[in-house]
Length: 365
Image (cartoon, rainbow, N blue to C red):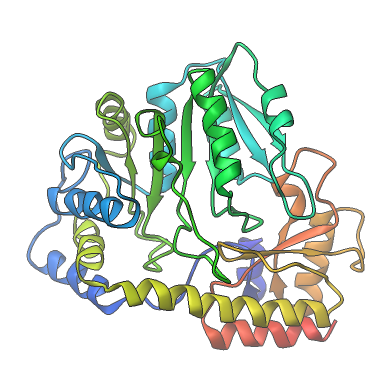
């Protein structure tokens, strides 16, 4: 959809590119690092300054103590962190439970390594977890659970009782828990993100993935990270080295400066700004006859597309792009075959002028 949107010069609410401004301190530090010659390979797990800043952030936000030298890895995006974790901890034929709707990169990363994703459907309309369904999906081949919270595409935030249910099963069956928490600061209406590694008995078996693509609006920089117990990290770093060598050196410096210098008010304002964007897009979708509920987190809206012509969500998305110049993702991209055909996903992490123009175009439906 991004390719087609670019071809016609449309407004891209499909891909989560997050084209809002980069914080000045992050941008300036990266530019300075380039000019100072910090352009060579770093350690495969990242520069010490950024690893230490990530460890301090995890301590500050969640009370989690990670050793920056042995339990933190800077990755070429959170996606690279997942790839390294899967290479290190999983074997071909292993199964990983993945909640549906799912983020495509999660499922396809596992498939590319011949690890089998087993889908566990969340219950509509609020996408809550059914513990019985989760337990029924476990087999002798199950090795891990992959959990995205706040989630893409629904904005789902797993509650404490839901996380406790996941933790119980993880401990009982001696599984890993891999958590993608890239949208940890994008929470609305008083909602709270809980890091599952804080639950009793979970730190040692949880691989926490996150990064700076969304928080600092640097999706193209590819700077993410993983925090995990020291037993798992050396092998994860080994596979990250083989695949990516290291994350871009001067851009690591920029991310470190952001973690070190941006105040708590930055993160609060980030959530407030995106809550406003969410409200504007929700109103426009409603006016366009595409009903949607307000996501509690992340920066996507899943909207009903029943009124749009087309037999499939992909056809509906292309019709929308042709008639309004606004790109969305087919809902079927986030479900097993046969589901999501009357849903479209819209991203609202856009600059205000472009988002408002997209809203005006949608209202013309």
